[in-house]
Image (cartoon, rainbow, N blue to C red; front, side, top):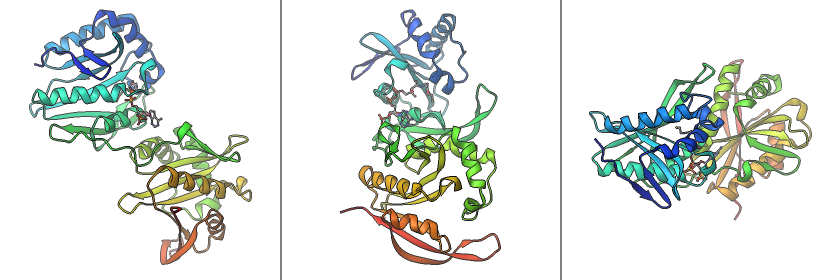
Length: 363
Ligand SMILES: CC(C)(COP(=O)(O)OP(=O)(O)OC[C@H]1O[C@@H](n2cnc3c(N)ncnc32)[C@H](O)[C@@H]1OP(=O)(O)O)[C@@H](O)C(=O)NCCC(=O)NCCS
């Protein structure tokens, strides 16, 4: 059983939840973000639910787990809970932060403090899991020194009856707990624009537009691999925030800045930190061609990458027959570098040469 202690970290004080927190707990749990990412909580969440939670929190301490209210200047700003250690010395952690206290490091500070408190009390492994779309929580795990270990597909039911994947993290007692800044930071302000095109993170709501674009014959002609179903494209669009936050790749919707219409898709993938290299790939709906949209988009993203990451080489590969794509790269400042012979398999069983392009980090 854990001792009922108070933990202090920076401006935060973590103590057992109490009746005085009830109204703040209601405001925290009766919130759309909380309801989305903690789908087992009652919705709407009432004062009665808060009192049931307080009783359960007290019982949790009795049963070998721990439940802390996170407070700042005496006010409730969130909670961290941990399960009773299993027979292997592993506990599971969960957290939430009040809407008025988010984005200020409360969850990551509290999660780190509780993990270290647990290690001091003999726990060997602290696990946590976050929904693949819960970018804030994925970032919290990294900032609190946890390491990503894998994913659980379709692990949890959402309120609408659909299922979602969870990403698993753990921190071990002997892990350093260090956290590195993200290799691919988010766009400042959430978007990038030159006034003509607008780049915004590809999101689940883009799945229909994305799927229709991939089905256009002029796009399908140069797409590698089999055609994807709408369901597969929906799943992909749910992953894009996680891929970005974990430094694996960036996927953006290219929009017409004037109308906001979905014009195309641009990605920075195959990120190889040891080489400082990544590859771009793109597709534009035929209705938006001939206006320089993709040239602008590629230039914007490449300029942003050199200004905001340590990438040194941004490369692109084009089918030798795809002269429109080669013109985009040339106009966006890329130079032709080499030819990889017979790289791209074609539907008719033949193979096409790949013309490779590069833009180097400006000196
Ligand atoms: C998840 C939650 C606890 C985070 O609390 P918080 O105190 O705001 O977390 P922190 O401030 O410590 O860190 C949040 C990080 O996510 C980042 N972030 C949030 N939304 C983001 C987004 N859409 N894209 C990229 N980064 C995002 C923030 O910028 C911050 O990272 P930074 O410090 O590197 O800039 C809070 O959002 C919450 O209570 N959500 C509802 C309940 C929940 O999801 N619980 C976790 C279940 S696993």
